[in-house]
Length: 429
Ligand SMILES: [Zn+2]
Image: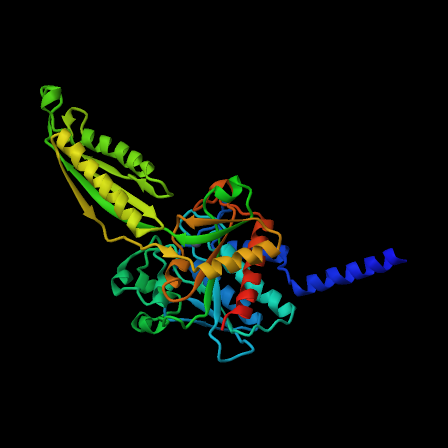
């Protein structure tokens, strides 16, 4: 008898706990990923949906329709972002915003950006089903052209320069033409910018695009920050001369100096404590003939880290070593900074903590980690308290048709997104 009563209480207790904890529907979320992948589906079974393409525009329309079906107030802003609003109980509060992107790199996969976007739709649907009205208004943002330079989020953060409009992507359309194609208006782009503190908080769920979570068997990554990145062009000038008649001790071999430099970039980057990365990814030798000593070489140099100071420190050490190598090789070296820098973006600590608590309450394992890739959250962090949730990428593969995240992992991430939104709704003013 006692046992029976106890089990009734247990069942009641469990159902109360479950009632307090709405969950996303894993199958519905996975199906939306498949539905989205139909926009741009090719004969080989892979999808192409670069920003501004017909497929991108069609997918945008489908998302707008879906959001309207969920009862949201939806519009396309002047930068081509999809903005969907769901009213809150207290009209004086600022919105809690969340979202990601649905455009893809050429030859990309079905999960980058799409997981965060479809999970955001799922969160809204679950709130509807459970008749939950948040205090804060909620706002879903599906950013335009993330892969071509975080265009939509830059516009919202108020620093999308007019020069960017000229950049042409693989569709053949320029960014300016693309904005118009997506229903935006380049002449009114400034109106898209939000002031600091207009948004209570911003959250983005995304696939990790690396292999750390899978390797360490962790379900949820809490992004501590998005690394900054700096690029340089490094030029070595020696003297192009006859490879047969010039003795070994009389050469000014620019390629030999560059080779030593490439090894040094790796060694120096590794010599500091921390997670910084340094890469030489490109090399060009002139005149480029087997029987001529290379007289000129240009290489790239890229350094990434969560701290601008660390990037600077690693660069200074590499520069000093490069000059030493050049001197020893009897060649000139010149470092030219390229205008492609992105500053590191630190995710708001209190939001990281809220993501951690939500994941723990859901029984999910977590790890705080940097993001080595850029995201819309990077620009949103300039104007709003921001947090990012990562879910595992199979084999650490991304920007490839082989990209994969399991339905279970996507649902875990969506549940963390949902409960972080609910927790922030309770805590934030
Ligand atoms: Zn992405």
